[in-house]
Every structure is written in C-alpha cells, then in structure tokens.
Length: 349
Image 1 (cartoon, one colour):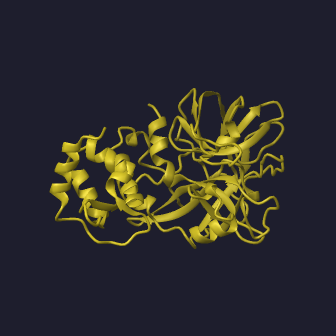
Image 2 (tube, rainbow, N blue to C red):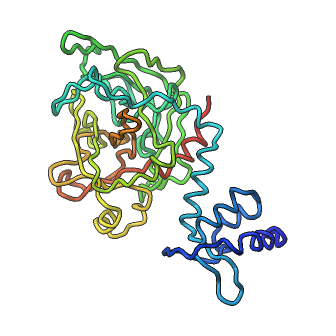
Image 3 (cartoon, helix red, strand yellow):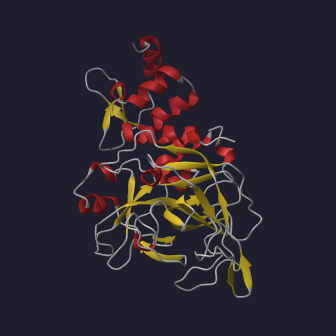
C-alpha cells in the first residue's frame, strides 16, 4: 500500500503551488505511476518542484492535485539521467566536425563519420549484415533486430571501403586502417518485440578498448543533456551513413551518406496508422531519399551548434520502414532520446 502519511504531507505542502496548465493527460496524481513512486520513495525538494512544474489543477470534490503525467515522467527521467552514476562513461569529446574530416561530396570520406561500425556474423567474406555507432571506448550502439538471438563474430571500426583483401583505405594520399574487435557481451532491450519491431535497440560491449587517437576512429555524441533530448527535431535535416548493408544484403563497398528531412510526430503516426511502434521512434525520409543508403542499426545524425562548436548528435538508429525504399513513406528510427536512461543503465566501465 502507498504511504498515506507521505501522500497527505505531500498534498499539504504543494497545495498552494499547483499550476493550471493544459495538457492531454491531466490526472489525479495517484493515477500517475511515476508521481506516486516519487511521492512515496523520494520525498525531497526535487519531487516537490516536479509537482509544481507539472501541476494542472485539482480534482473536484477531493481537491487532490492533478499532474500532466507524461510531462511528470519526462522531467523525472531528465533528473534521473542528469544524476546518473554512469553519465561520466560517455565521452566529453565526441561528434566533432572540422575541415580535416569534412571534404564534401555525396560520397563520404574516410574521416567524415569515424564513429561508424560494421557488425559481422562471420569474417569469412566478410559477412557484414548491420551497422552501428561508437558511443564510448568500449560500446557500440545498434538495433536489437541486428543481434537478437544471433551470434556476433566481430565488430569492425575505422572502415571506409570494404575490399576482399582487407587492405588499408587510401584517399588523397592518406591511408587509414580499420580494426576488428570481438564482442564480449550483447545487451538487447528487455522489452524488444520482434513482431512489432519496438524497443529496437541494443548495445555491444567489446573485449578491448578502442583507440581514439586515429582520425578514422572516434565516438559520436548522444543527447545526454535535457536540452539536447528536448530539442525539436521536426523539419530538421538529418544524415544517414552506411554501406547499404540490410537484411536483404543490398550493399555498397564504399561508405555512402544521404541527407533526409525528419517528419513531424503527427505525420509519422499518420503514415503508420498510429501504430503503437511509433511512440518511441522518429520518422525521416522523402521520395527518393531514405535509409536504403545506410545500414540497419546505423545512426541518424543531426548537426548541433553549441558554444560555437558544431557536433554531430545521434538522435536515431535505423530500425524499419516501407518495403520499397524512397517511395515517399518515411523510414522509422529508434529515438535515442527516449532510451538514454536505458543506455546509461546498461553500460559499465
């Protein structure tokens, strides 16, 4: 049972501070699981401020405070993430863009996306089937459908042009060398649904640390601050990069890139008939442009300017989409902002 004393004290304390803001899910706070959990287990000033910030009035008759439940959950999660003990495991330097990396053109260059990873079921061939991204010196972020119930032989980083002889990639007089790593642990989201392709996210922990001293190996930034997670993304231009490896084994030997528009949440739901799988996903793409140019599990990237520094933030990863690429129906991308808590919960030093 809930602690009635705790709840009563909380109601009395905040009784003068509940705002009358409008929201679609304004409810008695005892019906909002996150609000009840905070009221019972974390009776502190932060909890009181949460109630004040998300309050939407009082219930008639009882005068019990009501809260915007989804906003309460979001702000509570923002607080949890900002105080997470594993937040320091994500690199401070990441996603940097400079003239040495960006050369231009439709075809990516060896230094443009140094966080790209290839996931192999077998290195005989090689048999790469999915992509991923480097998020720190030990972990690769990818899609659950790429690794669920599958044996992953290796992860390749620092690659640009895949060739049968596994030779270094030479470009404009400079040569870069890729490196293959064994996987120590595969972590698939515990609520991944293969049929609906929901919670399509996974982590791969490598057996060794990656060396970020090479220009072609470097981590991408994740939206680890509340400001980045709450950034409006509709109509933003995003970039998808990859070698074209999909479950259908359509491929390109050279790393390619494509710029695509991010669609509004409402339009995304309309495209997919308000399917439940869209609530934690982004839609992006247009006629003739979508994630057919990138791997399953590869990153959906947005350039963000912060204090005169431009960084690449991974806001999505390639999950699923229409049967025919570029048909005008946007692709679906797992929305990283909705899974930052899960990522931090599942990475270790």
